[in-house]
Each structure stands twice: as C-alpha cells, then as structure tokens.
Length: 230
Image (spheres, helix red, strand yellow):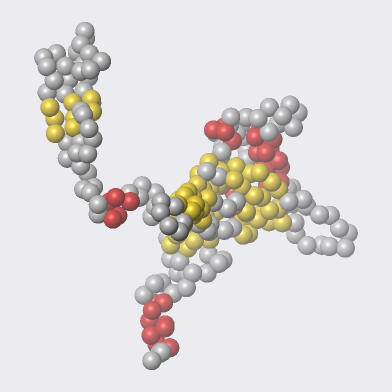
C-alpha cells in the first residue's frame, strides 16, 4: 500500500529534492589567453542556465551466427550550451568574441593549436541546504563553437541573454574520474603484485606483472649494458 509518509521518508534519506536553480558554473582560462583584466571566474555570476549532460552509447549490429545483435560501440556526447545574462558593458560578449578569435583568427584564418584554446568547465549541482555540491560534471578540453546573436529592438526593454555552445572531448563526474571498471566489478586485484627478478651482473632490475607475457623493464641499466633481447 502506498503511503505519503513512505514517499517523504524516501526523499529525506536522499537529501530531499534536486532543484534546477541550485547550480554554479566554473570556466577555466585557456592556456593561450593573454593575461589581463579579464576574470573568467566572474562568469559564474552571469551564467543563468546550464546543463548536466546526458550520455549516449552508440551501437553496431554484430553477427557471428544467426540474427545480428546490438553491441556497444563507443560513447558520444551532446554539445554543451550555457546562457549568460549580459552586463551593461557586454564584457562577457567581448570575452567570447576574443575566445573564438583565439581559435580561428578572422584576419588570417590560421587555426590555433587546440591546447592553446581549450578550457575545463565544471557544472556543479548543489544540495538544497548544503554548500557542498551533490554532483559535479567536468567538461574536458571545451571550447566555444557558436554564439547566438543579440537582437536589438526599440519595443523590447528586456535584458540581453547570450547563449554559447561548446564542444568538448568528453565529460566526467566527481565519481567517474579515476574510475576503474575492473576494480568496480572485482575482476582482479586493485593493485597487482610485482615480483622483481635480477638481471645479469651490471643490469638493473625488471618487474613482471601478472597477465603480461615477458618482463617489463623498469630499472636503469649500467653504462655499456643493454636490456635482454635488444
């Protein structure tokens, strides 16, 4: 039998409800950004809407015998869109203008190196009555690819909103960073044991890890000596 008290008790065990307005966005400064007065940290005050990403796993049909069956192929990620409230001096618009010009300069169209223009973006969801985040989504090697135009209209006195779309390599959470599938499933020890076998005189030690055919050389070799088999 359904009981309203059981419903409330269930959510009270999980810190009540997650609310859309309890979030914060952090955008790091790209490595190629010229040091100046622009403070990327201030964007958090103007990011009005963000997204906790979804997750897509692409599939392919595998057929060994009989009817093809779907199997997992690779992960894919949707673009990230952030919307910013515009300040009177439009500093955030000029920031993203400069960022996109850093990626693809409009005066010569010579694309910059990726490691010069990418950023890390953290989207944090917070508990209702706790300063600590309940969920953190980190977007790695993110960079803007498009901005919406700012429409001007004498009959509209609303505040400008700037939506920026980002591409990124992948996203992770504060739970999946450093996640080991084998460790999670318990298929093998978390840290395999290492046995050390001495080499002939004048050579450094080698290490053998379970499941690896042949020795893995880890130690330095004395001058004038070479690893076995080389």
